[in-house]
Image 1 (spheres, helix red, strand yellow):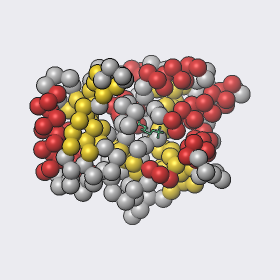
Image 2 (cartoon, protein in one colour):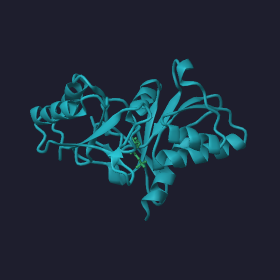
Image 3 (cartoon, protein in one colour):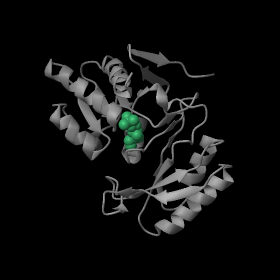
Image 4 (tube, helix red, strand yellow):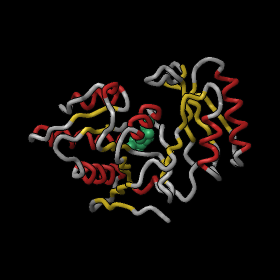
Length: 235
Ligand code: A5P
């Protein structure tokens, strides 16, 4: 079974949650792209929604599929946000930001009454941290900030503390986010206490935000070859 079919099935289950008149957060990544494409089909069939995209790539995709967009500045609350994830633990804490969109993804998810994560089962983990944790930082003094991020990983008991600036394209220039920042990818191997590391990273000057989404969702939909199943959060 291809992971893409599983992602499509998870996205289809999420599209079924969308009702007329909803204001939606539109995630970033390959799984969210399936959601946007399927949402576009429903819009063409008459569904009325407005979306807030979590990246410029998602904005372009939504426009391509005819999904109406609203100005993020005017948002008070969104009815529903749908996005993928890089890792999901049993408490539904997440690592996100593999696509470099974590800052807008977190702003949009936090503005939603309901944040639903869609995925195939490869993203389910017992402990977060095998996927390198993305941390978005200002370009100024990036080496200094990276060293402080490494110290935070060590203080949090992570077995590894390798921090590297994400590069983009064949020119080997740093990847630049939609917000004009850069991403530090943190190879930590395992994060013993994700909430504690999240707080430590947020306290470092120069860190704009990080890819740990702690306690932000109660809804995960896992797609497979046959369809999709909602997961229950462990007690
Ligand atoms: C984007 O910055 C990420 O948070 C994505 O949501 C995450 O990388 C999942 O991507 P896929 O759906 O492509 O696996």
